[in-house]
Length: 492
Ligand code: UN1
Image 1: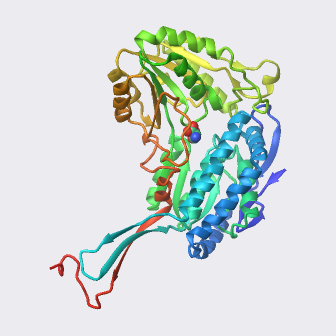
Image 2: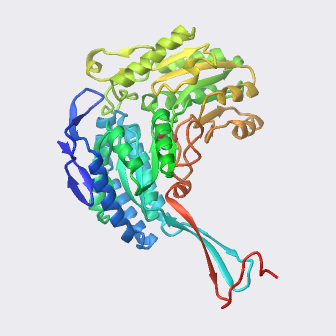
Image 3: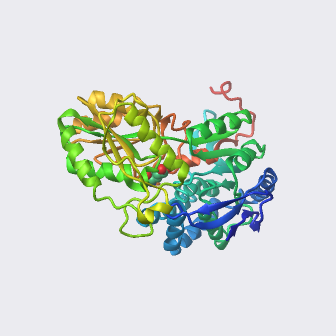
């Protein structure tokens, strides 16, 4: 199967000479071939998006929303198919794949609702017989660059607000997960979305991503991915005076206080640290534990980790699937080595798994370190795999300080039954998302998603906040006095 670009409502073969193969991370089998696009392919897509945007902007927002309702309905109808493609392509277990597709469906219906809201403000004017209001205006052609770990959900967080607000888009999915983008293109086509509103260009970040960022007609870039690439996107986009919305790394922590429900904390840690094989931006990578419950937590975690089944995510009984590719596996294993060198104590895991059926895939054993120093590399750098570090603290203040010591600020969590501690924590934890008595994952689509410090640059995905990325504010003054009134002068 060869995947082609979707440009201007037609399927077009990319102009590049190279192909990449899409491989199932669970068993190494080839799923599809993708021909890589060039700068010229991006130009074609931008041209068609620009042309389409002129008309699309004039379609009333509730009518634009009707397409999103239809897209949501089709996603719902194809939910099982989409989930299976997602598991095969990306590796997450089928139950989680269904959850991710559901996130996309929810986003479709939620953003469709915005077609009848998209509130601006009407405010009094300081002058008589003058009317003042602000409206959200579309920006034009926007560029979306999405990662492989949530190949559908994150794309919907960006593309659906872009659509409802009257923009058209070029979407470059990650090279590891083009099949989900292809499936979405089929849905856009079936939903009857006008040609050129949605354009998908397959290819590398260096060629396609750069061409999108440098193209003068692409006015916004919304990017989710690594901090390193995000910095490059911001620098290049900045030079071209573009609006750049970045969603990057995390080093998320669960705090377990001495008054916590330990069983609940164990469940929360397991789910958020090892679910998706630790490959969520929101994954728990540190556990900050109070001295008085450290030993108990360690024992219970080690015990609970023993029953986590690892394997191909298509098997309904499997809890942890493979990691995306060999490079990821090497990186994760590299960090385990760093942890050992830094003197952290390995309590469980620490191996690449190659036994039996696992031999052809990329599997890493869920891994737990303890006695980790808060400022060590293991505790400070993003690993993006099933590796957790326990850090001991003796007070809430110290826990918050350790949580906030990393350069990222996406998600944090506290397990405590003391309402005073909980309220202090939700105020003082410096992340964009805070959970109380739950793990660090599981953001809902109608709230802003994003983080502080090295995680982002002040923008948010999903929620109404996403509209801020894909609209400009326009302030409109209508003078019906019949004479020239001068603001700040003729006010008496
Ligand atoms: C991500 O890992 O980049 O909050 C997205 C969550 C999911 C989305 C994660 N709803 O874990």
